Image (cartoon, rainbow, N blue to C red; front, side, top):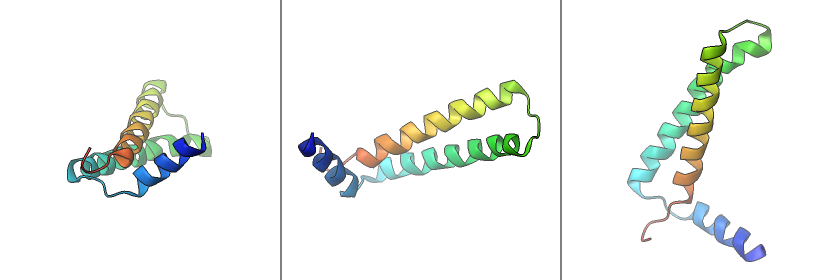
Length: 76
């Protein structure tokens, strides 16, 4: 398990290829946009359920995109 954690840390610290940098940025944009849609619900503002479900899906997709892109390493 320690070896796995060490390898993950090394992969995330390694340089990311250009394509995956763009994917990481796109994922972060999706997360930010969905966070902006979800934030008013904490203030008690009602938002239609369809918009909330779409925002939740975009947040999950963005976080997965950013995580996968962060683990991509040049040369593999």
